[in-house]
Image (cartoon, helix red, strand yellow):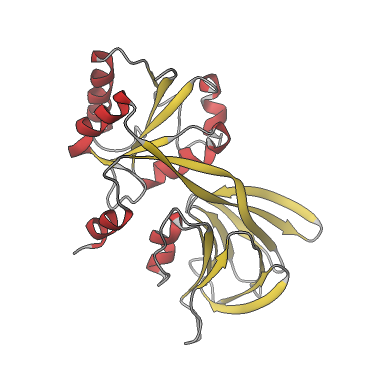
Length: 284
């Protein structure tokens, strides 16, 4: 590889130090330069973007290895989307769909990395604007999902949905999930949404505990735009991005959502199969 490899561990995870030691030893033995983010360099509890925390790395990396669970990979992918650097996840979590490698298989796959025997799969992202009246309050990128949901002690809410400015449905219940194909195996799946191959270009609208038997998930073309309008009736409503970024909403707040120009490049290997992974992760 002509560029360095960046290693971004989640030091809050159990066994991270041991896994990092093995990775460092592996690449050192092969004379491959590794840039390692210590806990001060990449603080996952900080509100400061990782692109700012790791700004000295910009332009110098050919690959980023992330050690952690899906939440760690989501944060890296979202914060470093502008870098256009492939990401490889090593799973220290539970049922991680984003991590390509389990720790037990690590050395075999790192050998592929060392020899450049891998490919990249592009994953679409969502971008969203939160608007209150004529004011734009916030802008977000998401790899998994954008969620509008009631607070923990709130009553049911109504979320009006529009596709390309055409009214589609009013969802009554606990809220609405708008997910990418990558996010279809996350919160959307738990809410009864379909599983979608992550290489596809679309997004899925899934109601959360809807108070209507006919409310089902809707699959929307990736070129469409979407608007969510909140009718909270003065109860607590929260916007979440990838389950990590949160913002309290008010009546008549609007969230504009569309496919982002940024894409995440996920490393995969010659024997990668989404359907085999799906079987392994979902089997009892």
